[in-house]
Length: 329
Image (cartoon, rainbow, N blue to C red; front, side, top):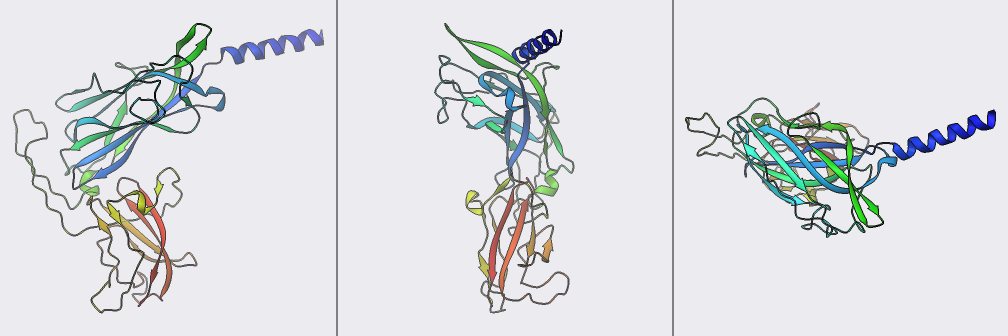
């Protein structure tokens, strides 16, 4: 009897494994805000839910809504992996945004992905987040004081998002639908806060749709930071972002040359700055940095000693920068 029970449990386990549903998660992530160019970029990311769910990507449709009074004119900025426009994406066709629409207050992005291969070399999706595409929007209103949501259309809505996997067969391949797990919506920071130095004037129009001509004023470059150092997904080095130039040091000796810690911020986005000494103590902090630090402690107002320090700079779109620099008088 015991032997029969063990065989039955083994059979049930094998049956469950063979019939377990493969699942995926998806998220929307604002990857860049350029206040001066008035653009925002959104990444569409996917991953398998667990290691047992790793699968070969087939066709896919990703659909989400956005506030058409703040963002307009979505375009495919970049395609990754699952596209003939990307490296190693030969078994896929070019992605497109066919089916995308814009209304008076709400827009719909429809990102479409196509498997066109033979079933021999599809790209595999694992538990690591993988970016499908970067979609760029025009920012048409920088005065909004609240966050704006990028909201998924899920398999329970219409139109719905979904994808399939490639299953190799003796005659080629089949496409099988993959079950949806969690959909994480994206959030666009309040642009009046993220772009405080950019003023947008919009003439009235009959449809009450943000648009028309704009007037932009850009005061001196700004910069920011954030004490949140544990953001591995978003941490980049300054060389990865040519629009942001951070000095490797400065000499605040009141000679009129290189006296301030000046960050060149071509995007005009709000930045914060924190500076630490080699012992990990905060010597300077400013949530809305305006290129005015002259090497004095925030707490005491006295000059900090010459030496090596470390900065943490955070942009309003979430990008984080960390590196050492020197002060030499």
